[in-house]
Amino acid sequence: MSRAVLEVRDLVVEFRSRAARARGSTRAVAEVSLSVAEGTTFGLVGESGSGKSTLARAALGLIRPTGGGSTVNGTDVASARGSTLRRLRREAAMVFQNPVAALNPRRTAAASIAEPLRLQGLPRHEVERRVAVLLDQVGLTGGHGERMPHELSGGQCQRVGIGRALATRPALLVLDEPTSALDVSVQAQILNLLLDLKHEHGLTYLLISHDLDVIRHMSDTVGVMYRGRLVEQGPADSVLAAPSHPYTRNLLDAIPGQGRERLLGPGALATDPVDTVGAGTPATGCGFRPRCPVARATPAGSCSTTIPLLRPLNGHDVACHLAEEAGSATKRSSA
Ligand code: SF4
Image 1: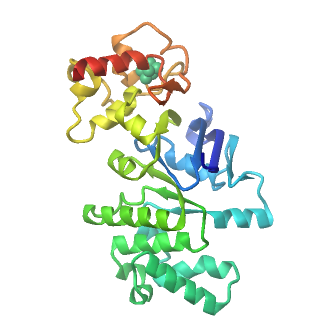
Image 2: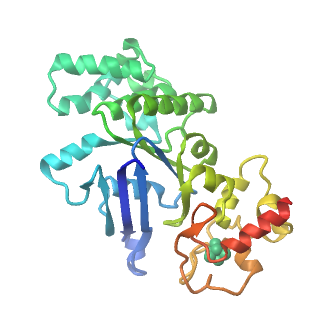
Image 3: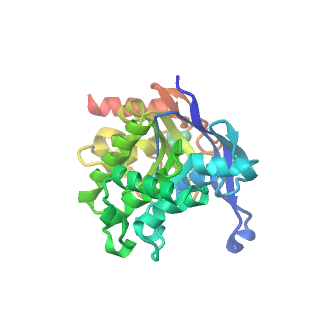
C-alpha cells in the first residue's frame, strides 16, 4: 500500500455570513476524512455547491478549517509556519477552473511560470532553463511563452497554469475543475496531458469535478460529496460499477446510456423527486432525504432521525441507512 501524500481527518468548514448570522453558521464541509495515496488520483465528484472546492482549499490551508485537519507528506497543514509553510506551498499546488482568469493579464506565459521559481530565489539562468523545460512538458513552445494570456487559447492558458503549478516540483496537485471552462475538443487533450505528467513524474492528484466522465477517465479512487458530506467513497472501479448511494446512482443516471429505470428501479421516473434542486437540508437525519426515492419507498428507518455514516458495502464505503434496499432495487430492475 502506497503512503498517503494527503490525509484529511474529520475536516469541518463553517462560514458565518451576515445573512446567516441570525441563523448561525453555514456548514460547507462536515466531518470529511479521506486519504490520497502517492501516485494516485482521488476524484471528488458532486454537484456545484457540494463543498468540493472548499474541502480542497481547507485541506491545503488556503481556508482555515473550523474543525479537524489535514497533512501533506506527513506535515500538519494548520500549524505550519515559516519555512515549513513555504515547503508546504512547494509540495502542494493548485490548477484552477478558469485558466485565463488564473493568469496575470500583464505577464507573459513564461513570466507566470517563472514567478514561483523566482520566489524560491533561483538564479535567473536557472529560472529561464526551468521555464523552457516546463513549457516543453506542457506541450508549449518558447513562442507561446512570449505571449500574453489574451493571445493564447483557453487550452493553452490551462497548459500555462499546469506548467506554473509544476514549477516547484510538487508532490500533490489539486485540480479544481481543470477542464470545465474549456471547449469540449480541448478537454481530452488537457486530461491526457495531466495523465502523462502524472505517470512521468509520479504525481498525486486530488481531482475536483462535477463530471463523472472526467472522474471515471482519471481516478483511482472516487469520493462522492453531497452538501458537505462524503456519501460514498472507495476504489473507482467499485464505486462506479456498484454505486450504493441513491445520490451516486442519480449522478450516474445523468451519463447518456445509463437510464434512471435501470438505476432506481421501475416507477422511479414517475415518483422520483431527485431533480428538486434546492430542496432544503432537513434539520435532522440524512441531508439527501428530501430528494431520496429510496426513503420515499421505505418510510420506516433512521433516515429522518440519524445522519448516516460511511460503512463498508459492495467493496467500498457508503453513507446510507438503506443502501442494501437500494441495491436490491437495482438488481431487480436490471435482471
Ligand atoms: Fe435516502 Fe435514507 Fe439513504 Fe439518506 S439514508 S440516502 S434518505 S435511504
